[in-house]
Structures are given as structure tokens and as C-alpha cells.
Length: 628
Image (cartoon, rainbow, N blue to C red):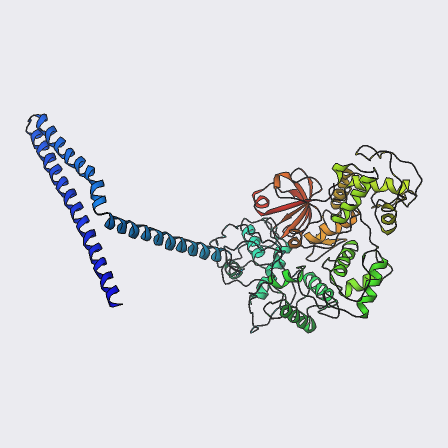
């Protein structure tokens, strides 16, 4: 071992001496050449200053150039002579470069990550924070009681596993304007250019829904300020006094939370959802002790901070399809589940044999039932779903207009085989043309003509006795085929909202959809409202779609982002009349070229307005083609 170490030391010494000798020689040559060149330059300058012959200077410059050229010609020979030293130097240089790049990249990534962490802060009070990713939860009732002085306010910091993409659009930094401490910054009922900043700040803090701010200080803004003042332990007046304004625009402002003692439409909506998930025994009443206990139980089951208060994370989790319910779910079993399975099978939703075990087939059947019966389609058998399922009003399963999925594609494929539909129209979307083909099939096969594929129509469609059509249906006609069949009942002329005719095309359905939406212009905005006379943005879209004849479960703007039922468009320039437009924390109905109808909180009512502004372009996520 000592011998090996000794030999290694000798080799290292030789390498070091070779490197030192190489650099010494190299430096001497460069220095010598530089000095001679400098002397030549000095002589040239002196000669020129003394009006000497330029030829002498040229000779000196030429000599210096020759020396430099000679040195560079000898470099290859020197490199060969000291090749070991050169190799070591190159290894050291390359190693240094690699290490430097690695350290630099790591530093760069760390800095970038730090910046991302700063910009994605969960602190909703930060003035520069981006808008929230769901409809914010704030009290609709200005008199809603909130926390008492001394109550704890633990921040909700744990978010359940997300199943949807999170989109963030930067919000312009809001700067506080100089104020006169002796009077209010703005007065209710007036237009003031400070109000857009105030409304935007209230939206970021969840006291108002996401919407395009206005300069009007109306009741909605006043009520939001009252709740903000109560939450932040200020005198509750609804006035925009200097103290309220300064705190609102600071990073010390507390975000909205729904808690024991609160009341209003937002509390009603949250309590209904907790009831559906099985965490409370009744959906009636305000935010009482029992609801607080239910919220805590829900938070614990869904890995949230347990404080019994409903903030952003808790509300998002409540409407997340992957939330953990206190209801029948995958893996449960028993006689009750067998009872519900038999009912689902009778209504045509469950296609497998009931076995008393809540499996994926039962979950899918429940979800389809919820969609058809205008419930939140989460696949859980909660109290509301169970009550609806066992009632006489339960709607049986039938594929119908606007649905999407493999079952729709199977029906289209069979219609193609029977010559009712062309191959190019097989797309898994239950379009108006598919509905027309089904209607013709029902007529030719002596079935009730309603344009829907229920159990009976499905049975005949896939039987060997199904009657073929003489020609496929087209957009301009019904196609051929004989046979009898039922007729679609004609709505009474006195019915202001008749059911849609199954033979209607997409354009007729869009016209009807927009007429329904316009019939509610001016109706009051109320948080959690789902009609028929008060709405929030999600409730308005939900009510209009179902009124237009499409069975659609309730979805928040957050849930709309991940919708797969309808054709999606991600370019705001391609939004078409009749589309549902999805923004950050807001949804609307497109009524024409760059116009939309929506429940606007900043306006306090249903309005029709332009969405061709920087605000809506900045907050646009996607749109969905409901009618095809």
C-alpha cells in the first residue's frame, strides 16, 4: 500500500511540474511577444511624431507579427510535448464547467420554484393574489352573524387531492388611494372610480363572486362590506369609511369564512350539500352547532384542517366528485343497497344483477340516475338521492339529446347498421340528428315517438326483428322507412314554456334556450339561488339548461371546468351562440356575437352584456357546445 501511495505521489508531482513548466513557457512566450510588439509600437509612434519614415515602423510591426505567428505555429508541438499536462488541464476545465452549470441550473430552478411559491400563495388576503378557482363563498345576508371577538381563526391550509386542473390568471395589483380621514371614501348609491378596486378586492377575499367590477356602490357591495366589517371586527355599517377601506386594501384583511351563527343563501347551499353527503340530519335552519359538527366531520374525512368553518378549501372539497361522503359508497354492502340496486335496475340504470354490494357498476348507475334527475352527479347514495330514487317521480333511464358517452356511440353504431344514420355521424354525442334517427326508428317499429332511447326502445333496437330504414336521416329531412308508431304530443298554446319538440334541430333549441335565459333578465342575484326568480351564476345556467329540456345536474363553475358531457372549446374567439362560457369563478350563456346573459353579482341581477373586454378575455377558461 505504501509503495502504491509513493508511486501515486511521484506521478502527481511529475504532472504538477509538467503543468507548471508548460504554463511558465507559455507565459514567457506571450510576455516576450507582447513586450517586443509594445516596443515596436512605441518606436513607430515616436517615428511618426518625429516625421520619420513609415517604413521603419512597418518593419518593427512586421517583426512583432512574425514572432506571434511563430509562437502559434509552435503551439501544436508544445501541446504534443506536454500532452499529459494539457490533458489534465482540459479535464479540470471541463469538470469545472460541468459543476458550474449544474450548480447554476440548480440555483436557477430553486429561484424559479421560490417565485412560483410566492405567486401561488394560499393567503387570500395578499393584495397581489390571483383570483380564486371556484365561486367564492360569502354571506348573502348582510345581517349574518359571524365570529365573536376572541374566536380562533385557523387557516385552512390542507387541500384535498385535486382531480381538476387549476388555472390561475394574474390580477392587476390594487393600490390604495389617498383618503380624507374625515369622510367616507365613497357613498352608497353613487358611482365612484374607487369602487372597481373595492369590488375586485372583495372578490379576491371571497365576499363577492368573481365578476367584472363596476363603479356603482349598490346594495351587493354594501352587504359585502357589512360582512367584511363583521369578519374583521370593525363597526358594521356597510359604509366605505377610511378605516374599512384601509384594512380592505391591506394584507391584514381577513378572508370570508362561513361559521356558526351565519345565515343566508350560501349557508343553505352548504347545508344541503352536507345533508346530501350524510354529514347532517336535516337541510333546514342556519349554521348551528349540529352543522358545525358536520363540517368538522367532513373536514376530518377529507384531510382538511378541522375548524368547523367553511372557507375556500372546504367548499371546493364539498363539490369535488372525489370527496369522501358519509353515505353509501364503493365497498359498502347490505340489504339496503340491494333494495336500491333493484330499484335502479327497474328504472333501467343498473345493467348487472343486484348483489347487495356497492361496486363500480352501482356507482355508475347512481351517477347516471343523478344526471337524469337533476341532482349533483357524484355517484353517492346520499339522503336526497335515496329519497328521489324511491319516489314515484323518479325518472327512468333513457339516452337523450346532449348526452355523451360510449353507450351513445353504441346506439349510433346500431342505427348505422339499420340504415338510419350515416357513418360520419357516429361521434358518441347524442346530437339532434341522432335524435331524429331515433324518432324515425321508433315510428317505423311501432314505438312511442319521443326521441329517447329507453329500455323498450333499446331492446327493440338491438333485436333481430328491428325494422330497417330505406335511407338515412339528413339535416334537411327525416329519411325513408315505413311502419307505424306513436306521435309526439303537441304542447298546449297556453303553455309559456312548452317541452321541446324531439324533432327540433340545434338552431331551434338554441333559440329556445336563449329565450328562456332572456325571460329572467332583471331577476335578483342571490348567492346559492337556483331559480325560478333568484339566481347566482351557476344556478342560473343550471335552471336554464334544465328548462330547455336537458337533464343536467347542478355544477359550480369549478365543476364546469372538468365537464366531459359536452364538446369543449378553449378559444374565446370561437365561442358561439348558445354555448355555456366558463370563467374563473363564473359561468354565463352566450346570447350572440360577443354578448352573454349571466347572473351578475356586481350588477345585482340577471343582465345581458358584452364579454369582449380585457377582464373577460383574461379570465376565460373554456366554453361548451350544449346543442349540436
